[in-house]
Image (cartoon, rainbow, N blue to C red; front, side, top):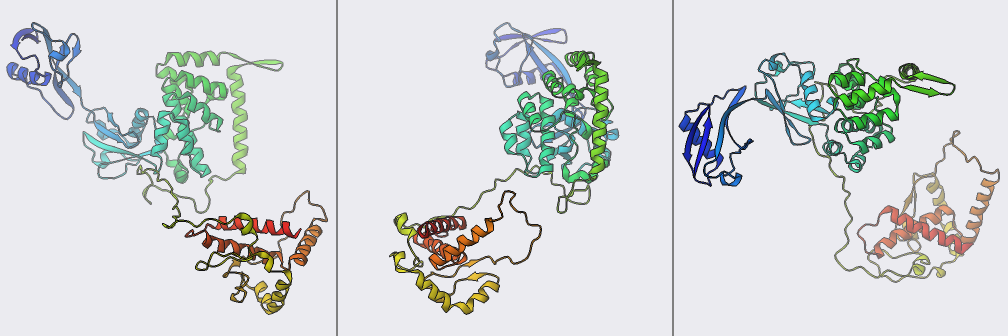
Length: 529
């Protein structure tokens, strides 16, 4: 088929097959019109074909876009400016372009570059770091030329270890994932809430913002620095003082602004590090709707009991009160909230924990069962009436508890009286091998605390006779059963330990043994009663 090409005011006809691609046709036009496309580090020139006002991609076939015999195609030479550098975002996997000339690499500071990256990515500057392809970290106080960065260099953006999934959930507005990824440490968790509110205000996640405000985050509170870097707060980036209300005004998020103002009117008087309020920020960025809303709110009147104040005077009073409360709180508290053993990160002195490592799932090893079939469990009534259970290699024949009477226990106590003193004074109480007829193996309990604690808390509602009632109950149990409560506890734990071998488990958990021992002790006390 024959098509007509319009190039620089002239028309030329070409006979091409219908299935020819746009890329092949571009190469044919370059050879026919002798087009020389210059390509340098700053500007890239390329050839573009358009049909019906739409640009054609190189992979498209002519017949697929409706080009038929006699169609006219427009050919243009276009140019685009190459980015001065690129930044690979390890959180989203995208590559951000930083536009500018070559001189940008000479006068631009690292702090300014982080501000540009923060505006493009929506992440606060205190949540990421930048590094060169060689892994050298870029510090805010230095210039880009100090790192010999050339045009077209691809830098890398990394966040705190274990924060990748959390920041991804914040960018998507997934409240449940954000809630599940919060840190267990209170200072870090509060910092994460401020970061999440910053991102939600930037992207307009209304539901996430409302939930964060309910959790204690404040729209007029700066994001700040990570608790690990609180000792370096004086040299921190200036954008760490930005609040979510400022980000909402910059990104023209009107619904977020209404939410913040409704929650707290004082947010309209909050100023950023450049001493700008949200209204001035909205005006400078040309966001008409946000500016009109804030201006109407500032020109309104606040009705109080027996008085009506203009909004600006009311905000000034609220600001004075808030400032006084803050000064009182800061005078009573220390400058730093760090404790002994907390992590401390200082630029240039230790390795930063910002390599975008994923959060590892903590898995607990499961206790496996033996390959052979499990023996059938005996009835619970039989288990609770067993004086002792056989060892691992013994048979499963269980004796009745009725064959042991309290008199036998008294004889055993008299037989082992010399050992009682050592048992009380020793670090632990043990059952010796001589009592193997009663107890199957050794078992130990923690020692009895004998030190006097004068500051021990007592129950407020405890009666004066409560200790007397407890003592009489223990003495009654000893006279009826022939064993002290401590000896009865050792006995029940020994039975529970032996029961683990009967159930053919490789290892019986300690809490499970303790639960069985409690059941045995409760059943024994009910029988005695």
